[in-house]
Amino acid sequence: MAVGSIRRGHQRRRAQVHPNGERRRDTDSIGRHLRGGRGSRTAGRKFKIPMSDEPGTYPEDQLRGILVEYLSRNLVTIGWIRDLLLPECLQRPTVTRDQLKDLVAQTKSAEGRKVGLALGSLSSQLGRKENDFLRQVLGYGYPDHPWEKDDFFVRPEHRELVAQVLDAVRADRSGPTGLTDVSASEQD
Image 1 (cartoon, rainbow, N blue to C red):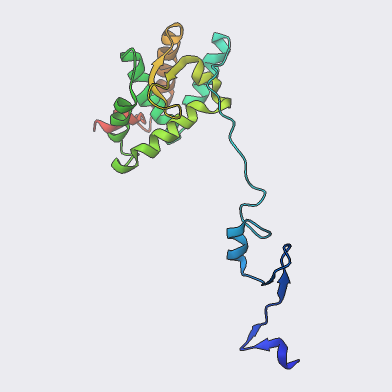
Image 2: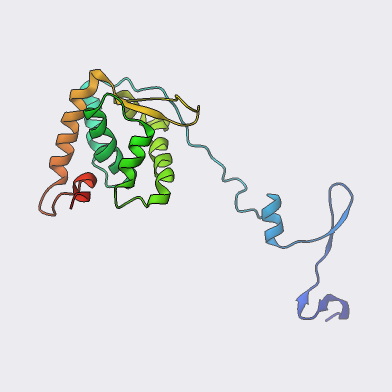
């Protein structure tokens, strides 16, 4: 073994020539990660979720099926849409972001200081390009900031459809295991 190749039990780092001609010692993987160079965990994994504000144009029977399938999923954010936002929009002409914040804060699934994150998740679901069926029945505006959805409402031509879909989904979700509706379970 050559005397100069090992120093205190560690391999000697080789000097590298940087593209600008500067000699540099090889850094560890953290340095490469911070620079976004080779070995970076984020290199090549950047993708964007397509977003849109355009409503869908589904015929009513197809829209009903898509909504029932989507709202039947047992996911927290979808539960907030199903159990909080849509019913509240059927009771009032418009639901503000603050009113929705208060509703979400009352659920067990959102801690008080994480309500803003919950609203962001809900807003993201509404804005995903693939969820155009939601925007077909549910509208919103941007009254304060161009990045903040507010003033949610069920479109008048779909109010009855949304009420029927919610009834169908709730009937399917209640059964031998009991009621799983977020808003109903919070009243216990």
